[in-house]
Image 1 (tube, one colour):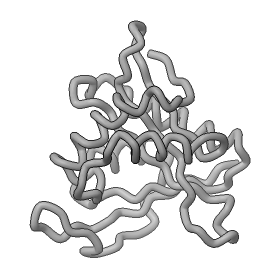
Image 2 (cartoon, one colour):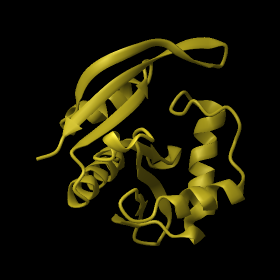
Image 3 (spheres, helix red, strand yellow):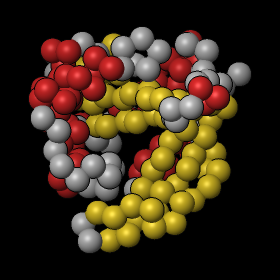
Image 4 (tube, helix red, strand yellow):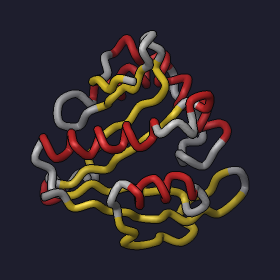
Length: 163
């Protein structure tokens, strides 16, 4: 497996992975699938310090991706980022989530960020466990702040401070 920065031509594969989660899971609170144009813009907006990283196999097949996004829009939060990690359903259980998350955190460290935050749906235990294993701490819970599939969802707030 190889981790590399995303380019706009990765948008279709990223879109396939992401939209499957929009339609079938609580991994994202998006309710409407993205268009290819929106996905291209999302990748373009996350070049440089707010990066998208691609995980691909030896044949160049994209198996997952991770991203760093601004945490809040106020300038006092500029040293804090929020992570996201998605693995294609066919490639789960192989340690790719950890590989991607470690690369995302290392990218945040290399760009001088101080804190990496994760906001995870309370029922998404795999993601919570992944972040705990990667050194994140649970620092809070936002109760019933999201709604998807007819259910109220908590958000678990996790944090890793970078040296």
